[in-house]
Length: 278
Image 1 (cartoon, helix red, strand yellow):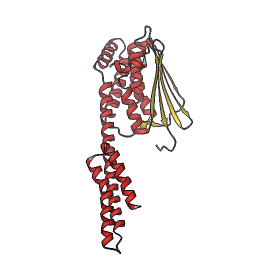
Image 2 (image 1 turned 180 degrees about the vertical axis):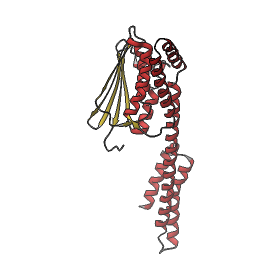
Image 3 (image 1 turned 45 degrees about the vertical axis):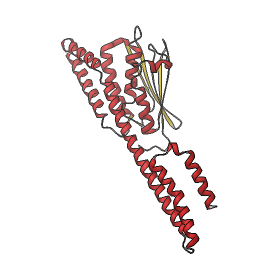
Image 4 (image 1 turned 90 degrees about the vertical axis):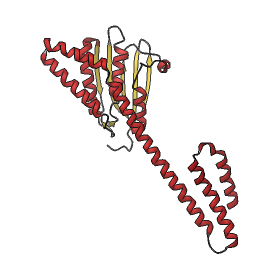
């Protein structure tokens, strides 16, 4: 039966050899060769359990390899998250946005200095939170994320005035999520949805607890788009894939999009809450 087991191991190694690295092949070969050698030696030197010893050593090799692979995957995951955080910050700090905001503040300095001062304060908080997100590796409270969103929307309302209407329907806020999750989606809604529609539109952000998950909806009644054309349009929903990746890696969340040209867009985020500690 030992020989039969070794034959099965050889067959599996042969079938899956293409997907294995060099180190993995040698580790699995040890699980075949060492027991085979032990059985051969045991034929001539009876009385010592060479097979048990060889199998134990092979299992140790396999275990150490698995641990090394898990450590490598964790390092890759951390690198992906770091790259995602950097990419999302760079995509959000747009020169044209800063130029338009600063130009609007300059105009307010002459007509309404108090409002200009408030706008500068919101801009400072917006920029600080953008930069802080580069080093935030842990999940943040939803309320903190919404402070960032509110700073951004204040600046956009200053520019577009009655063309942009904001509705917040936050039924549930006691949860955590990755930094820069809602803000990039809200920016896409304003930039590529509402402002592209004649007369502007309404941005609605909802949060609610449904069963064992939190659902966040970011909806606009702007220009909308064809979801099948996303990959062919480098300007549509710039940060969506980045947000989707960070949600999946950091908290097992999901992101889905539904949109129709001329009717608007809805982005839905689902965050599992069962067994999750703050």
